[in-house]
Length: 137
Image (cartoon, rainbow, N blue to C red):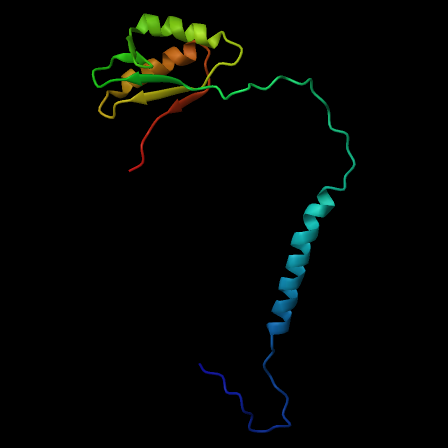
């Protein structure tokens, strides 16, 4: 329905409410509150606890790359290893001060149970940072 801007009787009061100034006021208040709210949170005076300084590693730790080929063979990097050798190597890696992230690459056609077997070996060694490599469609 189109709005008519002329009135038949010029002395008659308008019965429609103009809400544009009200909306402008609401937006102005919203902007003011958005700016002042973070400032109010930073004014609380508290003493945060301290911790002993740990030396940060000078270079980032490379992830440990484990792979499973289509035949179900485990690979440590580029080297093929058996189940028992994989378990013993994972235990040695887990005993280090800063254990790496274990990145697992598996063939898409591989039975899921073989991936779960490798996950059991990794978790059994005490490693908890695990990444499963995938590719985007």
